[in-house]
Image (cartoon, rainbow, N blue to C red; front, side, top):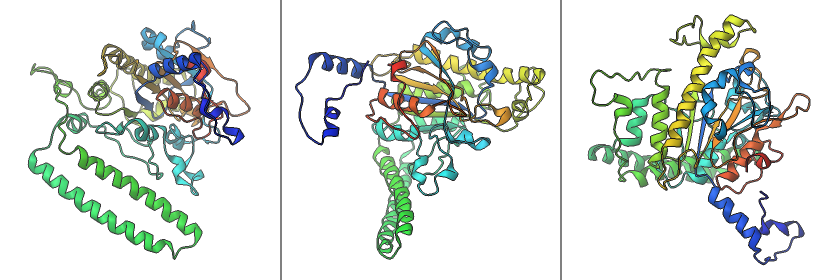
Length: 425
């Protein structure tokens, strides 16, 4: 469907003319508005997925589900897989994992660190302002960056996440929190006033640095005000079965990674269902942890450097199939859970699975393992793009489509050259 904008039609002519409303175009616009998603979730394994088991050989709707994604077979009609998406200009190494949602490396943004601002944080500003948490950052960190170019912390402790979402502070704790917020606000007022007085004495280059600093200050001020506004609004009441296992004393919920993965996904569903947030990022950690699964003999990082040895690839597949199975379970719960409007959470949520690491064995940032589900997109296919030398299709083209599907009027993000609307909407 063509996303027609009457406002933009004469923009290039430098005139302001209001066109008459065309019924056919208005109907198309209304239909698109009905299909606009409301929420965004990103799931990211730090080391990506082994390319040999992730990408289908066939394109279109009748592709054979590849080895690592077999657990997702029940959701193939709700899922789109992409081959040859990557971030042009991003190099290799472990740092590429941190570029998933912004498409740039920190070393290339010294003149303008605001370029590190990630897709999820932009969406938090656009669609997260009516919820208690503009974004919820879970699991392993490193993929979410603030508008000031600062990497944001995450929480991988399910009990702590549950308390943050659903447990109210007692009156004494609330009073102390309000006191701290007032004190922090007063300190920021002084810092901001001092910075303004200093600004007139600085050279242009230093003024730019000071402006970046003030951007950080404004971000903190917004966060403090938000905390104060929500302080006396009760959190939703939900059962703590998700972290305690219910009334059966013999049921033990393992809250240690990786067994807590299903718990974290359940918390994500509850967070979306209760309108606690509209934006979630969940990162699977890297490192060389020993996964406690049968058949695993080496640490995770060691397995990713398999050198194409069959025995190591088979062990790595155990871990990555586990990730796919947990993601499949998450999609099933989203599909079965209604949102506050009675719509399936999967239909109203754009879910993206991906990593900034394409091939961990070679520390490559090319051909990133990316798929999207739900969100009212026209899913069910595998799309393969051509490569132009080293680069494939910019992943940011997909980000533009995600932004627009979430109602954000934006036709450019990071290194995008277009969008993928012709495939998804």
